[in-house]
Length: 474
Image 1 (cartoon, helix red, strand yellow):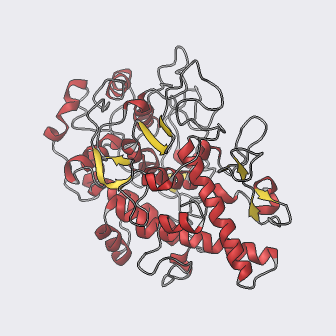
Image 2: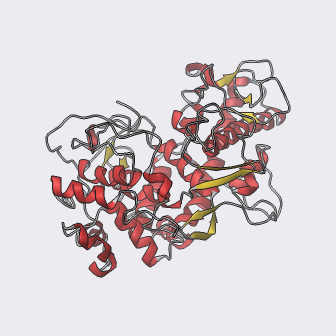
């Protein structure tokens, strides 16, 4: 068992239920049948669809999304790690979503940052006189130089000491995690300066402020960028149509396995991280496997492994960021077809292609086709001709299309790759807004009229750039 869910046991077809409890995965449309039967022919077609050099491999033809800086790609990954962690499901057996525990709480509450709090996760916190056990522990890229850039705290083997190990998967994400640690620490300083000196009370108030400002960014900046402001306002005004639950929110597999994996199409082959470091996402030089390889691998500490955030977001009139997201479309950067772990010999269902892994999960989770889901949502589905590239796969996949591929193609054809299309957009928006509405401690539930209170420039709305500046990293 690993965090990527590599188990190899056959299982019976799992049952289906309409209602789910908190901490579980579930289905939005439990009555819809799987898009295709789980046969060797279908698996072969999915592997072909997601192979290096295949239909989804962008190669050199991978256009930028001119309206979206690349920082939002990694913010999206950060949000995912805050909502879901499934280390137990398999790519080979069929999985019952209702039986799979979500090792993250389905809420935008930053448990990937806070862990279980200072008492239960003391290794995350700074117990020096300055930290008082309520600030996060932060280290330096050069521990001998107090002027060097900041890094995650690490043990002697460079394993990050953080609430979610996935936030050290690459340098950009690990530095975003550092920014959130520093944001919390800066809010602690403000809360104490405002007169709350008791450590427990200061931590509680700072955590509330951090979470609410973070949730504001999710609702009022990230979501409009990804699905469009009009759909956000429609759901806030008229309510959710499809994302319902009995007790407390759950994570739908239509969201986690398909819709929210749109971000994989936004990933660039490589990034300009700072003025002295431009690197590919993967592709370590075998001659340089040490602490500073020529890629963006996580779990490393070296002086050049820091992020200049103006290269990922537009900051105070700075030039256009060096790094722009790729379009949301059915093409994926070639680097993601060769992930840095190898397929296990003899097990074709454990491929190193991210696209193949995503597609195989449609069988193991019995996901419906994109066309069936569109009809269930009363949205006109894509025509067969829109999906003609799938015809040669030989299993009528242009008529019954894997939901993830369908959502990417829908964004490509109906939103020019700038945002998600109507099916993908509504799935993501309803889950995001539903999670905020279902969390009794969120600002949207506890105080819907609340607005950010941390200082920003008079002409600036609070957003991720404001957070980075308040944290002192931009």
